[in-house]
Length: 86
Image 1 (cartoon, one colour):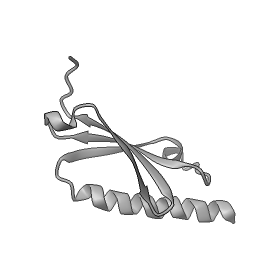
Image 2 (cartoon, helix red, strand yellow):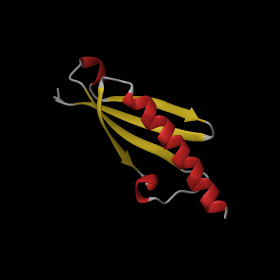
Image 3 (cartoon, rainbow, N blue to C red):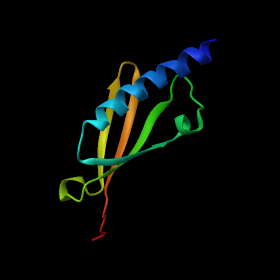
């Protein structure tokens, strides 16, 4: 029973996050990583996302600090579509 409550909490947080990402025209794709991608979550899980963004120097290899939605931690890693190592 408790696991189902936790799973629903993460599903709601992910749905909210996806709606916000859809509104950002600089994000081309989002890849769900971590335990949630395996549908295995527990109370201290977080949401891990890799975001593929437009070719803009502001987005190259940008790790963003974590964000909170309700009681769920979200971690992002952003990479421009055409990433060039320097």
